[in-house]
Image (cartoon, rainbow, N blue to C red):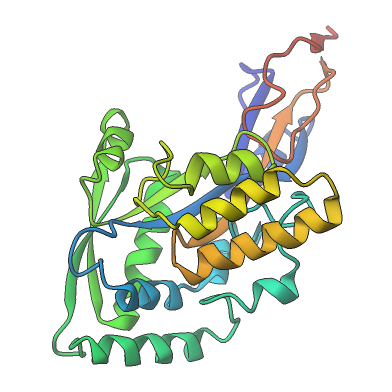
Length: 287
């Protein structure tokens, strides 16, 4: 806004209002980046080794609330693959609503979650205390605060543990956490990097330790299919399997903007990766 920068990537929706008011000459291209916020749970640490407890956490999520509060209603609900229209492989809404926790009736979901918690011995007067760890940046902290509020609806009381950036990924790779909120930045909107980097057994970015040999076979199968229509069907089946297993519940996809002054020429805003298009080999300044 001061004019000291020619281009700025990742302007948030609340910031965009200020840019338009204070720098009306700036050009801002909006996009839904492939940077899903997600819930991570250490599946090896009791009581989170219990699948019913993990399902409870999935069911309490109100994804629309994240979008309304953090991005002022400008975001997308999706699963592992970036949702359409910016994403090519994400589930259509009618299929997405069939996944655990994606039913728009949040009250119904939470009633089911409380029933599960009560079977596990938790009640309004006997609650589960957890530490919710996340990277100490606004893009992580803000949704983590909302997550803590939503967990209260199912007898889980969370305390925020903000971790310095230099320590965050070493911490999750060591699985030195119980519950956390993380961001998955995908290199490109394609099933192979999304699944192989994050969900197959032993993958480096598989921070929760999720491992299902059946899913690994499905991932290998989809990688060998060239027919787009058939591939989408298998990708959606993989997404359903990941949701059924509560592998890493996706919270939401935020919307943002790349803003630049008219003198910047040749900039193409990428809608499916926060990494692409930043080499500037095709950019120039028309002064």
